[in-house]
Image (cartoon, rainbow, N blue to C red):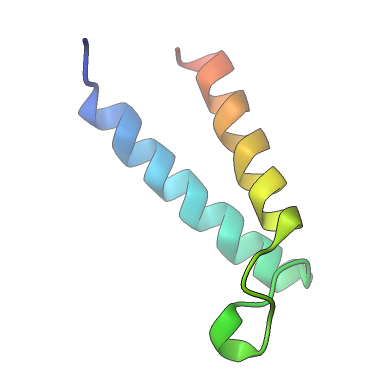
Length: 58
């Protein structure tokens, strides 16, 4: 099994960027700010971003 540290770091930054972007767009409200415990838009947003990253950088 090959572990690529750079890929893991980029994935973490990408997830953080998606969370911040969706929060600023009003599509995600954190639970501590009165939002729901589970956010389907956030789930699919992160899933799509990671899927696209893995298409570009397998």
